[in-house]
Length: 224
Image (cartoon, rainbow, N blue to C red; front, top):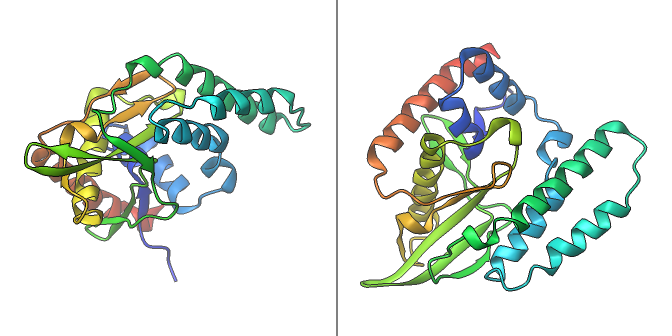
């Protein structure tokens, strides 16, 4: 049975602003994933998520992880590069901690295998690393934070806006009892580019663009 179309939110945002050849490569990687690519930034992802979930009060997991990675001496060149990339990501994050605003919220770890969103038959893995909960003027509010790592495919304002909009939609669908989804609490941190993108408030037009992109993905998927 053919695998149904599926894509991560970060890759979807990249897909929407990529050229044709890059779009097809993105879909090929999604359709035929490898564990190596999927877990490339595992150590950085886990350590940074833990630091943010501590309300940025405990950065020891990051410093400890850097020390552990620096002691490793893998024989394979690919593994050496992956370890170096994780160290670089962790050090970059340490240099941008002061730029992160959690809006006075109560952060917590995102779940390991959260619910996905579906647009036109395309399954979107949102998987926010950190959930943000707080109190607004009219009651409880909720948001979600997404990390991005690859330096060669940095997010821009437009693509980060797409990620933020989908994060809000995910909060509405998956956390309806926890509070009102808050745009400015659905932010994106591009660790590779050392840039924090604040959450967007206007989502309607962005979600229509997401729907159009998913229609294109559904049409292209069988040809990959």
